[in-house]
Amino acid sequence: MVVKQKHRFGFKRWLVVLLIVVEIFLARYYPPIRPLAELAPETLTQEINLPIIGHVGFTNTILTVLIADLLLVLAAIIVYRTYKKENAIPRGITSIFEMLVEGLYNLVENTAGKWARTIFPIMASIFLLVVTVNLMKLLPGMESIGLIHKTEVAGEGFAVERVGIFSILKKPAAGEQGEYNIIPFFRPSSTDVNFTLGLALVAMTSVQIIGLRAGGLGYFQKFLNIKNFLKLWVREKLGPFDILMPFIDIFVGILELISEFARIISFTFRLFGSMFAGAFLLGIMGSLFLIIQSGFLFLELFFGVIQAFVFCMLTMVFMTMATQTHGEHQEQKEATA
Image (cartoon, rainbow, N blue to C red; front, side, top):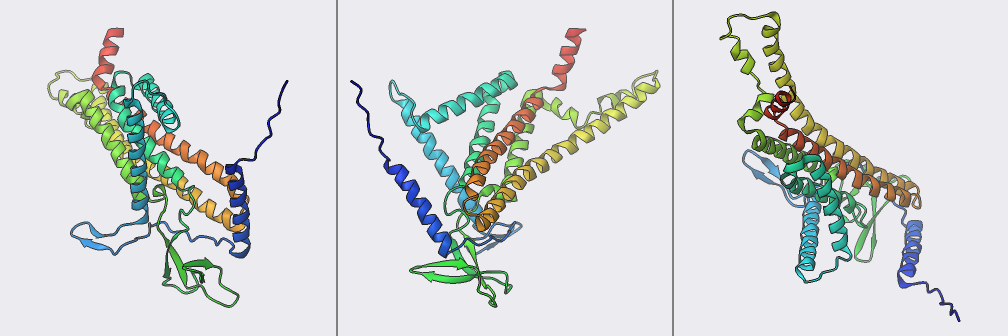
């Protein structure tokens, strides 16, 4: 005899329905406002004038990245304590990290070979930090909760309405000029060019360090290859090709040096441009069509992961290329011959 079980509409489903109803109600009486496009991060504290560096303040993007670091540290502690137990069975966040770390390490090992153990920690750390920061912008309250302040230019802000102990920005009435704006407590760090530039500098500095470890001082020959140029002065017989080649080597080295700086710029603005445009698009869609914004949230989830993966993959590829020294290529060429 088969007993049919009644399908219960669980608590979580009721909670989702309640949140949707509350969102529609609040949007009816307090419609979302279109955010202002601000490239520079907002400062939460009073700026301090430091020598050489200049004015420095604690910004909302710094606060967000510190929270992301804290979340990653807590996740690492949870995973470590789980595997420290005997006969531990990975579940929840532990199983996610196990799958993620195993997949990334296999990818690095297949690409970098014996240098996998050196490259993997840097590549995985960059991926985890960037993906955490990118996905944090999907959290409620991001860029919408903060301090109300008066704008410097009249007409470029919003009106303020008191609701209990809170203040809510709203569109100014007809004939009125908005005078207030918000300094959000939290802003996605990847929408700050300082954060993406810092990541790019760390990534490319790591590339040079690994290249130096792999090739020694000979690694710098790809930037300043004057070996053949010096041989011009000791050879007795020189052909046209022998004279031209050293100058070609020097020109190629200059191009290699320029490409290293170009990679820093590419790293910086690829991540910054994608994440800033996505965050601004979410605000625009939310102010126009509240329900449609949910679809863009899924797109931002997808692009946030993809951009983090692209960043770490390019870092891994550049590190692997740096380990392939000129000497190794020459040995392979001689062995083949």
